[in-house]
Length: 362
Image (cartoon, rainbow, N blue to C red; front, side, top):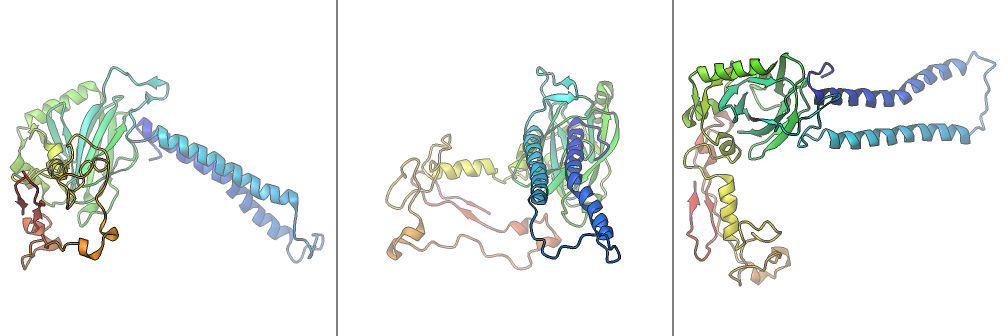
């Protein structure tokens, strides 16, 4: 972290140095004055002034309050500006200090999937994928799209950029650049179970020719990350060596993000679209209330409004609803077998809507 190979990590290191220096402006004088006062006003020093009625000094109050206040203002300004400048969703303005970004060159896309307990990197533009190995061309802006298969994790390569969380069903973004060739290390910075300690990956910076060789070598591996191969890879495993794939299933990252890689599993985006249509709203209208459930007395609620909440209804207006959760089978494996389909032994039922068939998902 303090010896960065990427410009984003360099700016973050400089921010740490600046913040530490500003705080030391208070800490160092206070430590010195503690020793000085203890020595000057020791019991054996007869020359020290003793004033038992002292209770106020305007000049001392000004120093005590003004110095910390100025430092807090400086830290606040520094934090505000750096928070926006180093926003991981924000494309970079420069490759390095004094070297602006080429506006004509789009960022290279790398899709990151946190698994139990390994990292999957998908290169959609190159058509390859790797496990526990991330190879980047130097001085090339990279956009990382990050998600997770099972639980919240954290993608962190200290020499490259800051830490970004990876969460199931969500997609995070990180823009970064690697400026130095070499081999570095990345890891998971969020505890995620038994194999967390070995959830690490190699980060390699190479020139353009080296990156082309890496892509060529991956394509020559002959491995394909098909759906069955991915489902096998998704199972919990520890200390997984680096693996290269010559090809992968089209749209794999989007299916992981939408949690529908396994055949027959509906994608989150489709379920949300279906729910929005069931609510009587326009599937392309994202205004508040456009996808709310239908009211009891109307075929479709007014756009931009919400149905009357249960807390504001009289007792006779609230009709009991049946329980739609299927009874759990005995002997569910729980946390001992997290990939077992029996852990997802639940049903999802749509409300009865005119024109839409009632379906179930098990």
